[in-house]
Image (cartoon, rainbow, N blue to C red; front, top):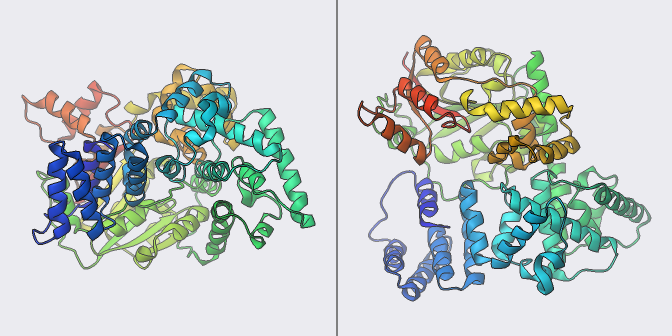
Length: 582
């Protein structure tokens, strides 16, 4: 990854801001290796980075930098292996997905050309030979960085999605012949099956593909029942198109011995879903769910838990909330909480638990109550939460509308991307404010009315076309939208998985917010605005617009003026922090 992305990841991984100790040999060597790299002394830099890794094998930035050095030296296969290792240690790098994808294409040149071909041919699917020539799948099939990406995140890139859609069909055709594949082909097919499970089978299919998959499913079902031999390739091929846990008698596959790559797929698609099902009964029900809108939203997330994350950020050192906010908003008028031993946190609408886990990991002393409407989402959260954090997070089913009955208050409340899915976002917000202690901190996220114009238009298009929220209809409507001027919705990362796409374009309840409405609520409820979360490009626009009139970033009037000038300023959401003043 490039230097800017590495810096961003390291900044997140060292939020405390502590300087490395001069007595730390790994830190001293790392500084020397970085100096050699900056002076373009690549051999020396590589040698010293490797010494760092002898002392500290999980030094993520050294691993990443060594990958960059090897890439500059033209040692692309080695570079790919180090980049894959750094992505495994610091999954937060995937937040800069376009940069990760650019790096992949730099270390894997055949992939760049094949992606171009697949995209130009779309919607026709090219075969493996048409994509890679005589080299075949061996041109990319065992690349470490590519395999890591496939098994970690949805693609978030249309060209990447299209080449994987083409490869999937070609592998299905090969599996349908019944001929045993090369080991590399089977391993790649399993990695692609894991990718398709992660993105919830959002890739487009043809009727011919569907028929071939159905034929393989029938043959697999008969073999399971009769005890006949089963080709591992057929399991991987089916798993590229449908989750194995949805197949009748699929649990019987666990009684057999399989190659390691197949066994990994069985863990992902059979063992882990079974664990989640078993966890449902253990989840406390804190409140009833009686509101009609809450019931409809709960049903959506029972069907489509959001998001299906794979790995939590690595290398995070917990810091006091005061320190984090002071570092993030150095000029804000904050009243310190001075809580480091126990910080009572409510994550209202925790979904599948990623936000709760990140808060427990990053906030010193955090003890988290994470509630959600959906038991399916909470079961996923419980299974995915790392063991080191599980004793600091309490998961429970509850409706925000009823949280006033639980008899608890909190130092910090997180409600990002939640309140705008309630019947009345302000009613939910008022209830959360009542649970916040004096001087307590609240982190919120709302959809911006100004920035969601294309989403609103896409939702109207979907309604006119009569698309339902089924996986098949989501796949079809995605492809149709891409052929219209509304293809701009593909700028959202949520476009690239089924549950997230449903959340983006077919949600059962959604409302939008404006900065003046936010300001009015803050003024009426003794809440002090601390600041927005924003990208560097937004900060540059803000400073350029207000450099002659004062640029206090806590002035919501100025932010409103900026959004009027640049409607996509808050394209994802208004993400912001406030403090209760009484």
